[in-house]
Amino acid sequence: MKKMYFLFGVALLLQSCWYTTDDDGAELVDPYYVAYEPITQTRTDFEETIKLLPSRPVQNAGKIYIKDNMMYINEKQEGFHVFDNTDPDDPQSLAFISIPKSTDLAIRGDVMYSHHLIDLVAFRYVRGNDELELLHREQNAFPALISPEGLTPESYGVDEELVVVGYKLKED
Image 1 (cartoon, rainbow, N blue to C red):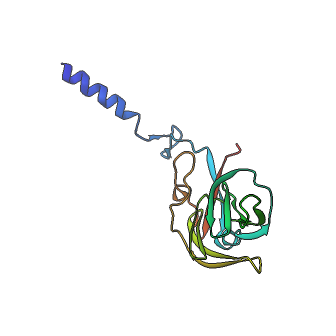
Image 2: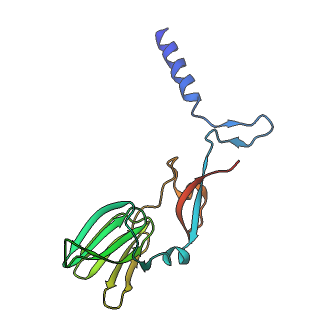
Image 3: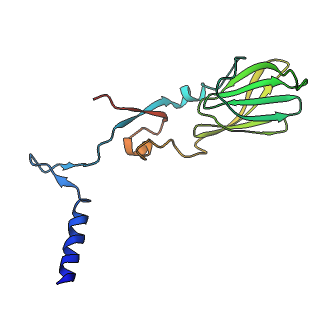
């Protein structure tokens, strides 16, 4: 008898995991309400967001990188400040490298590597010309951005030629 009660209890608990039909028809009703929608950009627009901008004040500093006489300070989720660190007591701000959604940097020789959301980019900052030279982009090197609800872009039916750059709450 105890075994019957146990099996009945398990069946009752598992019943909540099943999809149910709508009273008005045979359509499946998803009991999981999706509250977010993806913010997308075309691949071309996404790749054009890496820019060299004039220097600006550091507002939300992250990691600091020092290579030779140069210092790079991460502006969380925005890019990197470039400083001339010849005089460590008075570093001179040179430029800002805008790389949206980037949080980390690696430097080897004169080539810098950073993640640009889902891509890995290799670039060079040419100090004398004050120029940013994009050397290589490895597309889709990192996983796609997951929504706050834990869903992938595929769950939302996002086209492959679009890049999900964020999520926003749906407006009902």
